[in-house]
Length: 373
Image (cartoon, rainbow, N blue to C red; front, side, top):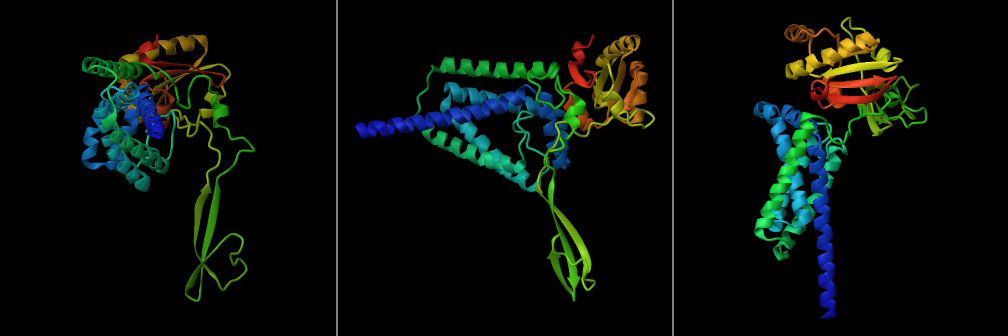
């Protein structure tokens, strides 16, 4: 009897750990998506663009999908944590992983996007690592589903539904607030306190990318591969055919990359901005067709104050020059527009427009357009 009791206790402890582990994964994944719904919608956009065809029709609904996904994950995780509707929740978590696991295998093989986005900007992992992670979560979800038949609820049905309703409201409210303003926690590379020149630099002792180079030579109709150490550089009987380079190990990559600003004369003024001794205001408008005109007009007031104070002010956009001129005519703004990569602009601030204040190369403030005064 004691042996059976001990075995039962061990089993209960194991499944408690499994339930809590699955709950933590879902809560973390849902929370980091909920606090950055716009970033999550960008990732969904990337998927829909990569798949092409009829999938691109759904791009206007990206933000809806983003909020729905984060809400499902967060509610599922909280339900697992508090053991509300444990049988239904375990089943839904398992079915979710039945979809995501083969999907992650597909993206691991085809690489339609650079990373899966499953943990937002908080934890960026490769597509291959995502598949391995999902296999592990799938097995945990399966084990919990089997065990859930023996688990009793902690609350009465009314209390369970009430808790689920509260979980949904909390998740949606978080997403809406972070969509209207900025993420509660900024995981972006251009967060407050970052010195851009330092974030762009590579330390002298930092590891570099390591490549394996292979040379293909031909002799008497037979091709053979050589390395840098043994290729026949002094043997004219070998004829060079091809060269291949394969990345063996990834070197250090600075937090800020691909940051470049070009003015209307197509001059690169990136250095002038990040090394400026004083304040620089950057109004970020990655796509003028999606930019709030009300927000753009609010930025005009900041621009006029900046001119009076001797500060620099630039609007950065990825839109064409024709779009810029049409936007100026519609809104009447007078600040200068410069060109930058739209993907980089999206990673600078989750607002369109958004205002970033740089002082001596360091980001000291970020504001969504609703808080621009």
